Structures are given as C-alpha cells and as structure tokens.
Length: 67
Ligand SMILES: [Zn+2]
Image (cartoon, rainbow, N blue to C red; front, side, top):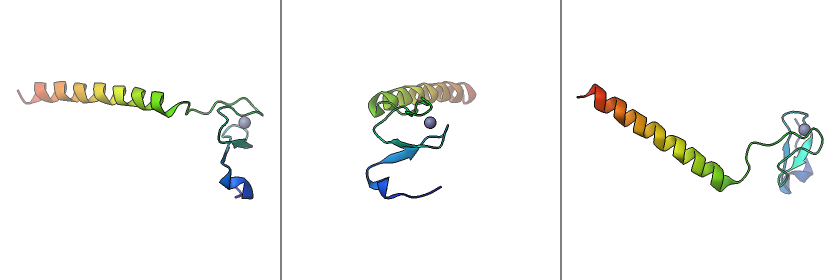
C-alpha cells in the first residue's frame, strides 16, 4: 500500500483490481467493480428500517420471555 500526493483529491483503492479510483466514481473504470456506497441517504434509510425491524423483533421476544 502506498500513500500518494493524490490523496487530498480523494481516491480509493479498488478491492478487486487494486487500482486507484477517484472518490466521486461509483464504479472502477478498470474492472467495472461497483463500490457498495451509492447515495448515503438511501443507504441510511434502509439501515434504519432494518434496525427498526430488529428492535421490534427483540421487543416481541423479550415480551414473550418476561410474561
Ligand atoms: Zn477495479
């Protein structure tokens, strides 16, 4: 791994082919690898939904146990 002077512009290493990809690119131009962080808002919404479901499930389980 190396640290370049390009760092301040924002690049990240492609996990598939280890080439430097600009941070504003969602896909690696070399191997077409797609980075798993599209729009932060959508991702956050999805995560909160999953968390809410998990919490609800936990409450239901706890309610059943402590009855
Ligand atoms: Zn790549």
